[in-house]
Image (cartoon, rainbow, N blue to C red; front, side, top):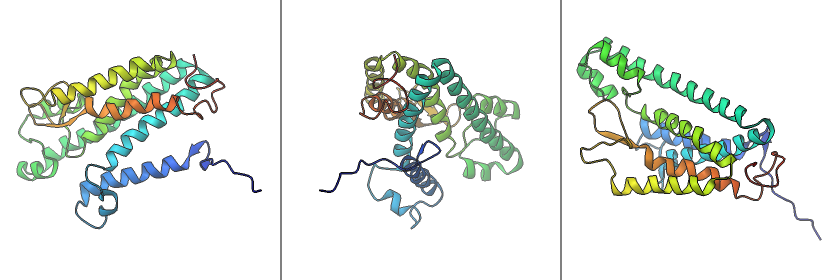
Length: 242
């Protein structure tokens, strides 16, 4: 009788190549939608309605965060995990700031009409105002909201990961589902925007609801803890260390 082989994802340097490959496809899906929508380049990753690369990217980002930080907490402690999260949020802020400042520079260099067509942003505010908006992540050129959403989700992990380390996953699930339900009841507020939405500039229309997207991101952390192989590499009996 042939022995049954247990499936193990291929890894390289501790990374799961299956997750890396899937996340790469998700990134390609987002890029092709923004720059080649309706072409053969974007068709393979947009074959099904209401399914796109951003959904997969957010879900996988939450899953990977759960995998990595569970192991870090088990081996190196919560303080190390928190420090790495703060460093990641800082890097994301710098990247977002660079994109916003590039938009400010473009608004000063090209004609206002051309700039509005390229960036979908107003060019008429003063330079000081645009710099202030850029520093506070409120001057987002077309497509620049995706990185800001990721930054918000990673910042939320500064609260979520310590709770999961204390095995408070029911609280995390309840809060996440409650926040998601609020977006269904009050999607964009009575004036078109709310504290749950991201706008590309002050007074602009809502372009993304981070409170809805967190439902995909946050639920991946505690779900990972319930998987039978989630204790691998942590030295614990299973799930998040206590």
